[in-house]
Image 1 (cartoon, rainbow, N blue to C red):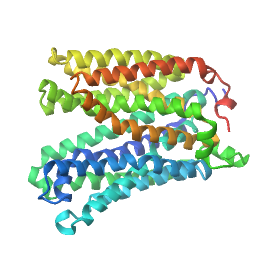
Image 2: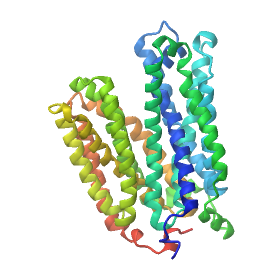
Image 3: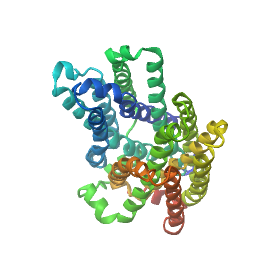
Length: 435
């Protein structure tokens, strides 16, 4: 049986497990800040400033992590294409674990003054740089390890793992808030999730020692086929179409995650008065279903190709999100089912890395994905909450319209993939893993 179509073996499962575990813990480290933003704002800024200014400064520090993603991702991808995937894959988790651990140990404004928020800002920038390298690096790493006909499920599994990190952050935040008083959290309990995240990250980094460099990179090294010029220059000049498609797919991915998973609980509370505890439970169900959806998308894209997966998946996302936003108010008893179904349909984003991995040649693959994904996520991931919030001034159903518009974009990309990238779904092994 050729390596192109062989089933996943024990080494593949080991690689996938370690990569997904590390990705989940790294995403947990990056996202846990938002669950404790209020108490962090109280402790790291002067007590006498207006509340709105405190919130702006706190979320400004959170946003700094997003803004640092493109630079960190491109720098790490540059070396990933030149010196090896594994080295950068291990470095990214160290760059996340140490700042997370440090945040849990930082002095507050009361003891260090202005130095405290500046240190916090610096740690968030390091975290952003790390996550910018981790996500594209993980996709490339697993895709170059598994057989070409298993790239979809490998990338889908990894994307599901990243989603588990968000769920883990929510669970830990819930446990801390239910087992401790607000005063106890304020007095030091808030440090526990960060210290846990840092410790877990170091363990995951240790486990990644057992991973092997990707066969494709080793082959390029042997043939001296590594990028001869600056990888990002080659990507921008020679692979414009792949960059545009990858950026648009990242917009679809960010819209699904940010609007449906991250923004909807607050929307449900404000629009229909659902209790926070109920929306948190519903959100947890939607996140679990998102993980399953990512796995399903990975399996489907391997079997039917990227075009059919995105055409059908985008139509399902459009319908399920429209029903969710429009029916949940009149049928509150259906909240868990409606949110769960739309969460499952958002899982179409699990097929996004499959297209990206196949869009760039191996010599600049890490840089191509990192540049497209991180620049697009910094723009759309950052602007989406602002755009949707402003549109809600026009219509309370703005989230439904936004997700519908992005679903149509996904449908269009599915048709485009059928026309322009159709041959990539049936290409021979040597061409898929081109150098």
